[in-house]
Image (tube, rainbow, N blue to C red; front, side, top):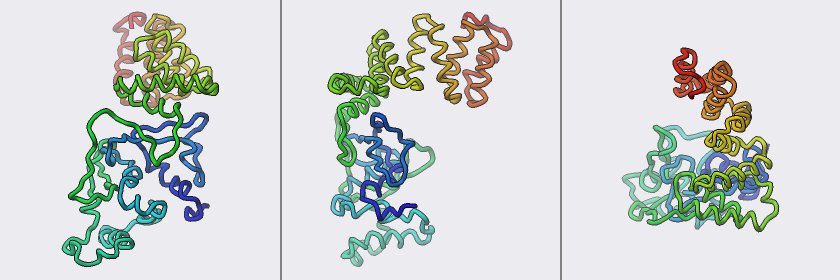
Length: 335
């Protein structure tokens, strides 16, 4: 057992941030895995989190309390002294009847001069300074705005294109920045894609370690594919798989490119690998069934589709294909 109070601020805060930091995008550092984190580690040794530099606050995301808190005047003035456990006991929560006075005492621990004369008619500090907002990423849920705003001076997001900034001033490499912009490109931002391509190519040219960086080559493949260069994309996906044979995204995207040029024999083992290691990857399972239909016949496809529905019973596309195959309503080879 670790006592967070015995750790340096970064490792202390990392215990909470493993769940309570999301960022606009997160990039896993080369050779690291987030699921390797253990209390006492620095989360930032394993990942870099980026926020939109124009932004102010959560932007509708539920797990963004830390990045919001960093924008607050309270955090900027208090520095490392203010952390999650300053106000939150990880082992208990105040009851509904105790909440107002519990959190008011937390505020007055620093703002003792406001014990009288400051909105005495409303003792609930959070109702004005930390209002609850609807979330966009978790349905039917609200999140407390940890920017600790002055109600008359709300934060406003600047206009213009996104500008990614590493949260907490954590150093980010050219490779990390490139992967972050590539994630925005995945959402349809072509300008982000162009920026990502420049950064990733620069990272690849400057550091020989990037030759075995599966994530870098996977994203370069995606960017080439987005730009219509299927040949270059295939080459990058193959490099990604050489570095990490279990990279499901690279394998699935390469299989799609193989299938698009009619080479189902090359696509089939790629989809088989993805679906074997992740039976919840229903899209790969359906694609595998289509390839099996063309190469091996209906029975192999039926077995695969049944496995898709075992793990994803609400997958209507798989259910419809299975029903048609069992009914024999269409020849398998035409699918």
